[in-house]
Length: 257
Image (cartoon, rainbow, N blue to C red):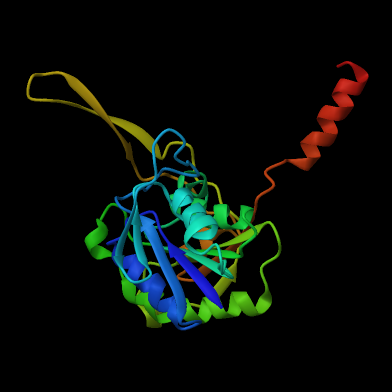
C-alpha cells in the first residue's frame, strides 16, 4: 500500500508527524507533502495564478508553497505519478473539524481532493478547547487510537466519492468512551463575530473571531459524539445536491409557479 500524508497546519506541525506515524503502521511506502506555511481555513482553494514551488526537506518529505489541495494534486499527479497512492491521510489537524467546520477546513479539502482524484481518503483531527488555547491539545488521544481507527475504516471500505472525517475527543486516551459513526452537525449561527481593534495610529482593523455558542448538539451528530468523549467517524460525500429540493423546484418550474 502506498500512502500520501498531507495537512493544512504546515509541514512542521506536530499533527503531521503523528499522521505519518499512523500511516507507517499500515505501510513503509509513505510520502509526506504538506504546505510550507499554515493554511488553516483555506477550504478547497487551489493555486491558479501562482507557481507551485516544491522543496524537498528529506527523502519522501516535501514542503509545497501552496494549499492542501495543491499538495494532493502535486502528490498524485507529479511526485507519485508512476505509483499513485492507495490512500491519502490528511491531518492530524490541530483542532476540531466538526459541523460547518468542514466547509472551511483545509484538512477536509485535502481528503476531498484525493476523493475527486479517485484515491480513498481519511481526514483526522484532534479536538481541543479553542478558548483554552492550543497548548492544551492532548495529542496522546489520536496517537493512541488513530492507527486502529484508520485500519477499521479501511477494513470496512470507503465507497467511491466518499471521504471519512474522523475527530478525536478532547480527553486522555483512556477516557475515550468508544466510537460513534455520526452525521455532520450544525451549530448555532452566533458563533462567529468581528473583533474590531485599532493600530498605533488609531486606524481600525478587524479580526474574524469566535465566541461560545448557546446550542445543544443534535442526536447522532459529530458534535454530540466528541462532547461525550467518543471518537466521531463521519462519512462525507462529494455530491452537495439537496435532492428533495431538486424535486420541489422542478415541480415549481413545471407548473410556472
